[in-house]
Length: 134
Image 1 (cartoon, one colour):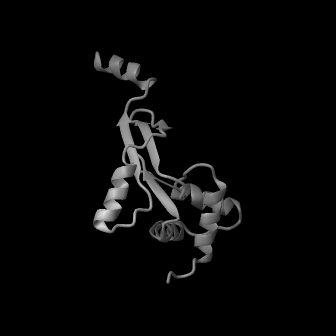
Image 2 (cartoon, rainbow, N blue to C red):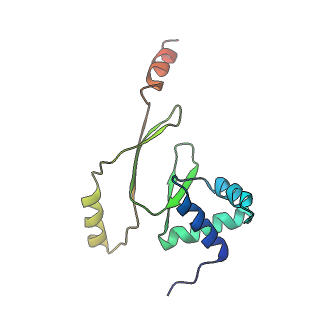
Image 3 (spheres, helix red, strand yellow):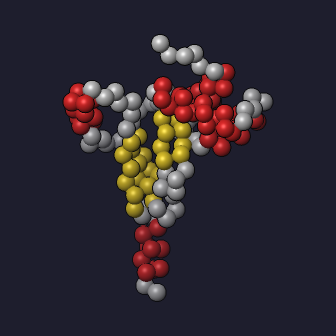
């Protein structure tokens, strides 16, 4: 039996449900303060960790190491530019069948998966080519 959620966990989960995109822990901290529901930054991180382990929050780590949190919706797949940081969602998923096989063969409960491709977007490719000519 799982422990009941704390007030901070409920506030964070409700905030994430109201947002249309994944956000950083610092963004969550600031937004809760703006809503007069302030909690400490360490509490935000602890609550996010608990919600992640419960399987209701998913985390995505960007190329720069920043973690973005969102409500559990679906698996996430992106093309991410290493130069400008643009992240383009992609709908195709080549690993759904693998996920099912792994759950069965390893008796492992998968909450979600991410698939991230890193490179240069069409806007940054000409910049990269020009920079390498010098």
